[in-house]
Amino acid sequence: MCSFLFTTKHIRNWKKANYFLKFRGPDITKKITFNDHMYIHNLLSITGTFTPQPLIDGNICILFNGEIYNFKDLGDFDNDTKCIIPLYKKYGPSFTQHLDGEFAITLVDYDKDIVVISSDIFKTKPLFYAIEDGYIASASYITPLIDCGYRNPIKANPNETLVIKLSTAKIIDRFEVYHFDLRQYKTSYKDWMTAFHNSIKKRAASHVREKIFIGISSGYDSGAIACEMARQKIYFKGYSHVGSENIDVLDRRKKMLQPYCDIEQYTTTKREWKIAHKFIMKHTESYQYTIHSGRTDYNEYDLALVDDNGSNQFSNLSRKAKRDNRKIHLSGMGGDEIFSDYGFGGESKYQHSNFGGLFPKDLTTIFPWPSFYGSTMESYLAKEEYVGGAYGLESRYPFLDKDVVQEFLSLDVKLKNNYYKNVLHHYFVENNFPFDEGQKIGF
Image (cartoon, rainbow, N blue to C red; front, side, top):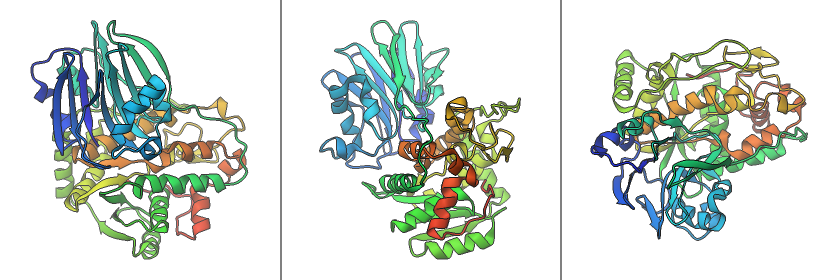
């Protein structure tokens, strides 16, 4: 994970504004003033050659956080960041529609008098911006913008590219990064299986030079990731928090994943929990969850990220990964939000479910459901990004790959509704991988 701050406003104490940002990029912090505007970038170097930012080409300047997985397809680049400006020169602001990755980007073109601010499809990387009193700013977190004197920073939308006129500080265009096809016409899981294989390959095997880890349980999401990693013979470490797990399933998985996975089983002591909690209290800015249901009045608007048990458990897990010098985390984020809506057959497994996992014949009647982009998707992505970022770790999201999601949406409604988390159920059966059918497990 990296982080950045861009502002057209002069500020006195940039180190204060960079306090929470710097943990996300422990390799190097670079601050420059370009055309009288301030750019700060904190680098976590994961892919390709060591490339501090911002990158400047003539009168174009960029700040980037994330990973571009198709950068080799876009040209002869030795680092994914280096593909962005050439792609912009070719396509203009719509260059974001040609990126396959997880990213937050700010690009300033002084000759064309524009600022381009964009998230990826699900805004996997945190992104905020401000347009006030003729000034423009963007940052990975909201606190830096407040420290720069912006009164009302805005949380960027997922799946959106903004184009702002630099001289007038007015939004002149906004458009989708990707448009989903909602036709449910595919009667086979074949294309989804291929998309999932490719998603793991691009995130764990292609151009990867750091060690990988996952939090592995007896549940669906981490199980599918672990199984596919082993199938592709990619070495990784799994950390298994022993609590409400199905130990039999977990033990059988452990045997099947050898020799590609070393699994460390652990319990979280009160002392470890306190250490993990204290760490994120000090190293993450304040963040309130916005979890709600689309069909009831249920909400969790008063829950702070640092008080969530999942955040603290992930903090403890991240401490172990940091100890083992493992920097890339493959997350199961999106499995509940996309494939099941935290329910099955119309019955909710959690109160924030929107339609009980019973997909309708016409997807347009529910799309996008609240947790597709927001609610638990937004809140739990923040958990992964804020906590992992505090440790200088990078999370990648195989289930949020655009092809994985698109292939799921394209499945015939009967396939979607046959089993709980139907695509993962099918995947386990096809690969003879043990799972606890119908159970939602994990911290």
